[in-house]
Image (tube, rainbow, N blue to C red; front, side, top):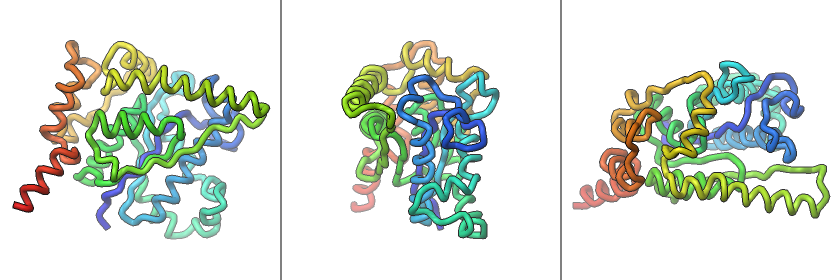
Length: 287
């Protein structure tokens, strides 16, 4: 069956191996520890797997680069994929099949519809680069996108990245989110935790991307450079000819970045998935 549905799993850490429910087996930032974020990571994978299993037209891409020097030259996405191959993960959700059920051909068949994207350094790149990777594999862009991630990041992924920056029709987007679980905190402390979490998301991510759609300003660019300690560089501008000019305009080596709207116009002129181009194509066919 033709793949038209992209399922994106944005990575948030690097798994070291062994029991994934033990936080010591993850490379985590300090702010990821209190909310037991690593458990959410496992749920992101298992939820995406269920979506993949339910839709023969779906293809899953796990996205995350080599972001941590202390972990060595291994991508977040690579370790997530290794974790997915550990069948104990698939059984971690009561709604999934058992390990025994997945040992045979069905699991292998589904695995052929899973790939990694190993260059993304932030949430915008998780989305854009996953679309680029999808094109590399299928020579088309997806018509539907599902993202599994943290619920408090849903606005950023859908409204800011997909709609504002990439002009992707949100009618064809599903965001499946969960929340951290600071289980050791009191009810009052949990309320404070989630209030601070929402504030941090707005101040340090959503508000910043609302001003810098493509992450090329000093603030977001410096964060990306820090998350690329091994200086890896993708080749999506070569493998995605429809959007070569767009990708070149948001590359790290651009000396004089264009304004958000100028960059978006470059995208709108060529990207097959944009709302404007699909509308124009529909009108032409109707005529």
